[in-house]
Each structure stands twice: as structure tokens, then as C-alpha cells.
Amino acid sequence: MSVRHSLLALLSEGPKYGFQLRQEFESSTGEVWPLNVGQVYTTLQRLERDGLAQSDDIEEDERQKNYRITEKGGEELSRWLRTPPDLSEPPRDELVIKVLVASRLANVDVYEVIQLHRRYIVQLMQQWTRLKEDESHFDLAFALAVDAELFDWTPSCVGSTAPTSTSSSDH
Image 1 (spheres, one colour):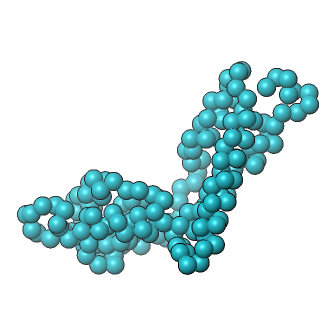
Image 2 (cartoon, helix red, strand yellow):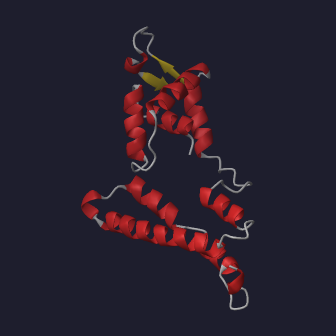
Image 3 (tube, rainbow, N blue to C red):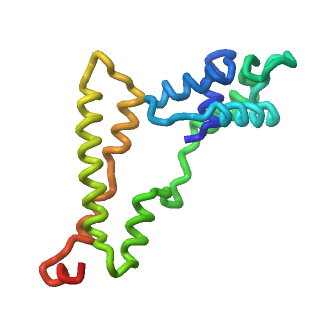
């Protein structure tokens, strides 16, 4: 996800100050993506430098400045929303790296590494599913984040690393 473009989207709703943008960003991502307020202000400075946003001309504390999207910023946001993500390279994932490293080590059972992760993910999915089903606290952003995590790649990996009767002594 692009923090830059997410801030532009929030600014397209109207003028906002940095801390407000941070709060609304976290709320709009279902509270699953915490954002450092320093990153917000750094991104706002870059948006302003690039002519995509502008702030009040007040020379006061930066935390009190209101920012608004410019016409150029609106065009950039529109372009970003309509451009498919670049999926030509596989995404970087810590577990993928762990599995690849483990597969090179003779004393590590790759199947066990994957199974430990799967058990943890199943527990999380059960918790998240219960939270999603609680209609009194339904949050679309959180539900989408949970659904994205539910599409886990580990089942396809398990088949190629599962111990077989002929090779189980090798693990």
C-alpha cells in the first residue's frame, strides 16, 4: 500500500492536519497498519514539494498546518487508483525468506517451520473470523485485511515439503 497515495485520498475528502491524517489512515486500514506520525509529516512535505498537496501558509508548528490536495494531486490519485499494482515480482514475505533459508540448512525441518506458521495463522484466522462475524463492531477495512490474510500460500508449499515415508528420516 502506498502511504503517499493513501494520504492523497484522505486529503481529497477535505483539508486535514498531520495527526488527523494518521488517525484516519489507521482507522481506514482496520487498525492493522500503524503509521508513525513522523512518516506522515515526511510524506506531506514530499507531497507539497511535488505539488500534489499544499499547506496553510502559516509559519507555525507543522503539526497545526492544514493540508489540502491540489489539482495535480487529484490527478495523481486518480491515476494511481486506476493502475493495477506491479505484480511482476513476487512480494517479499518474511516467511518465504525463512522457508527458503531453511531449505538450504541440513539440520532444519522445513515442513516443521511451515506447520508452525500454519498453526499460528489458523489461530489468528479463527480470532479474526469471530471478530468479523460480530456485526455490532463490523469494520470493512478490518474485514478486507483479514480476508487478504486468509489467502495464504502455505498449503501449496506444504505438499512439496511434507515428509514422505521414504524421506522422513532425512528430516
